[in-house]
Amino acid sequence: MSWTIHPIEAFEAHGKAWDALAQSRVGAPFLQSGFMQPAIDAFGRGDELLCLYEAQGQLRIAMILSKQHKGMWQTFQPSQLPLGAFLSDGTVDMERAAPELWRKLPGLSLGLGLTQIDPNFDPRPSDSSKRQSMDYIQTAWVDINSGFDAYWEARGKNLKQNTRKQRNKLQSEGIEPRLECLRTVAEMGPAIEQYGRLESAGWKTADGTAIHPDNEQGRFYRQMLENFARQGLARVYQYWFGDKVVAMDLCIEDSSVIVILKTTYDESYKAVSPSTLMRQTEFQQLFEEQRFKRIEFYGKVMEWHTRWTETQRGLYHVNLFRFGAIPKLLAIKAKLSKQS
Image (cartoon, rainbow, N blue to C red; front, top):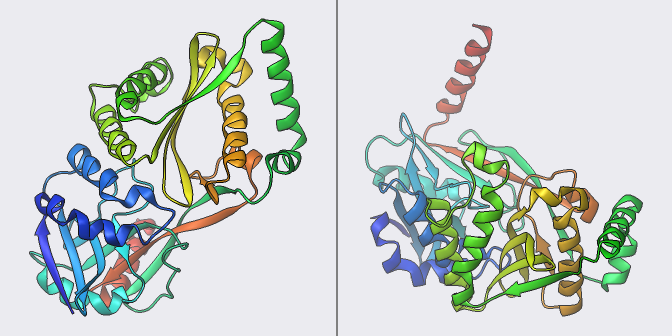
C-alpha cells in the first residue's frame, strides 16, 4: 500500500487509470478525464499534484491537490467542477491512508481539505480528533421513475399554470417554440459561441462570469463538450422562438445520469420564462427516452429547483489533520478572532 505523487503535467499519462476509477462512480461523469483535463488546462495554477494510492496492485484513491497556506492542501476545486477532484473505490479509510501522504507531500504538510463530496459516493464519515466534516450545500435532482404525465401532474399549481399561460401567449403572438438537441463534436464549438452570445448579453457580463469563445470559460466548455461528444455523452439543448435561440442547457451524461451543468436564456424574453419552457419540453423528452435514472442539477438548491423536484441531499467537506492538536488550535484561534 503506497502513495505516489506526480506533477500535474503527468495527469494525461495516468488518464486511463484515473478513468477506470472515475467510471466506477456512475452518476458523476464530470470526474472523468474528459472533464478534468480541460479544467486543469483552463483553471489550474500549474503547481497542482496528482496523488495516487494503490493497494494490492489496484488504484484505490486518486486526487488532485493544490497547496493552500501554512501546510494545508485542498482538492482541486474550480467553480465549474461540481465535486472535488477526489476518487475512491470505497475500500480505504482516508484517515488511515493519510500518514504516508503527509510524509510524501513536499514541504510541511499539516492538513488536507476534501471539498464538495457527494454522499451518493462517499458516505459522510464520523468526526474524530483528526477528521472533521462540515455541511456544504443541498443539491437537487429529478428521478425518472414514472411517465412524464405523472411527473408533471405532481408539479405545483403555479408552475403548471404559468407554463400554460406562457405557451398561450406565444401562440397568440404567432411564435412557434421548438427544442433542438446538439450532440456531435462539430456542433459543440458553434453551440458555445451561441451560448456566449446569450450569456454575454445578460447580467453575467457585469460580474465577469459570462462564457465567451475567447475566454478561459469558453475554451474550457468547448474542449470539455467536444471530449464528451466524441463518446456520445454530450448534449446541448437549444430552445428556439421561431428563428431565434432564447435558452440553452449544457449537459453531459453517463449510463445512468444526465447532469445539467449550465443554463442561460435571452433576458429580453424574461416575461415568458424561456428557460422554464425549455426545461418542460426537455424533461418530457428525457422521461420518454427512459435512458437515465436521474437528472442532476449539482448546484445549491434555489427556489426554482423546488418547482421541479422535492428531492435534496447534502454535499459536504472533510478536513483531515496530521495532528489532533491542530483543529483544537484552529478552534481557539477562531474564537479569539470573533472576540476581537
